[in-house]
Image 1 (cartoon, rainbow over the protein chains, first blue to last red):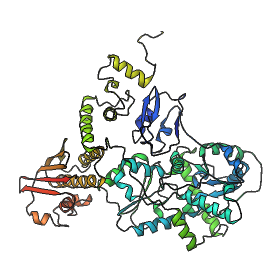
Image 2 (cartoon, rainbow over the protein chains, first blue to last red):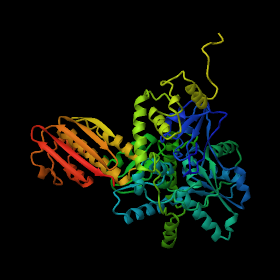
Image 3 (cartoon, each protein chain N blue to C red):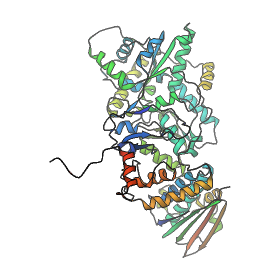
Image 4 (cartoon, helix red, strand yellow):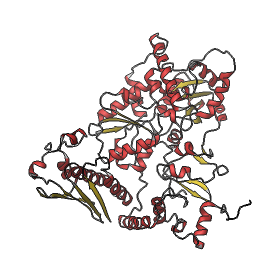
Length: 449
Length: 137
């Protein structure tokens, strides 16, 4: 159902063999991007924001996140694994982080790099941006890529409120590449692989909102690597524990992916909003100026933040507790001087500021019915009429999430009003429309009993 | 296109439904985000004014090719001194209303700032009709 040019490169795929066309995803999608066609879920690439809600709700596990083939890492001499703190949160705290990193090395990586080790720099970048834009009243954190896309398609007037700084994994990948090249490695020999907790971060690297090039070579789904590492943790092999290249995580770094993890670093009146519906409600009211939020608004599509990502394995509340526990451990180690100290190099910061800048975030409204105002006006009027004629029960039997969505599909020419079972169920055109939506699954009244 | 909404005294929780629904239509029409924002902010302010001060009323919104006209009509105490009410910071809102974060005296001045035309007909003891126009071109 890709209509015209697609803005985004998505990572979500529907497995047609597993999909039952049950409409669970259709109803849950926050941007109304999914329809049932030929009995299967079909996604509209321009509307999808990669929030991953469809993966979480699908009862048949039919929606997957496309990942890069793991053997891809063998193409590189230097195989860097970028590990987010959310990955560590998946494992029992009885395993030291070094033990987990050792398992990753045994799987084939040559270097382990912690994504959040330079949050101090990211915070500095946020503050620099906020100071450079005194005219902006409310700043929205750019951390969750699904939030950025949600704003682009649903709240276009708020794009100017997003802090234009790229994601922390972009900083981490640049830092490790710089380190390795400085040590004499050839750039083309370095492959950087990020373990992702969600679909949005993959999409963010496949088609970055910045339009700038990414330094990430490939992405590996968190659940996939979790299974591999968990198996190895169980065996009693006592290899020397491997530290990561950058051994410097602090409690603030580790807590960053959790809901509230950003705002604690900023003074004043800050807001931390997590969970899809909460984010939508907040943005809606922010747009109406019904909420007067001055300062930083942290927003995470997933409840509890990244530990609630669709590709995580552990219960989000357990994962949160584990990260909080590890944050305490890291702080003690740091006090004992076991961790690398920060270097405050102004030249490095200048370089980072440039690399991490997002030049522009474009609004991409999904609501607009037509580029021509007069035409859009006619369509909106027709839509209102059609909506009145529809039953309003939002049964989704037409393959659209609601009667309003069907009305919109009809005026856009993507569906016929005959697909509504309440309108004229026995007409031939209705039967034909139904066959198109649901395939051949019509049941007769007789049963075998 | 025409929309009608009801206003209930003291019902702050449901306030904003009119502006949300108008906002959706304006987005469908592809109206410039800056104009959408002006419209929605003005409408929400006017609605809150009526919820806080009046006994009840109606909102009528008309959208055509050139403009959006919003009429918020209430039955209420009216505005005894319109010049004062138009001043920033002037408010007769009750302490309860202020506790909810409203009543800062920015309502009417904010509406004026966000609209192209503003007409206020008010009669003490009878009610107030606020007519706001946002031009699209």
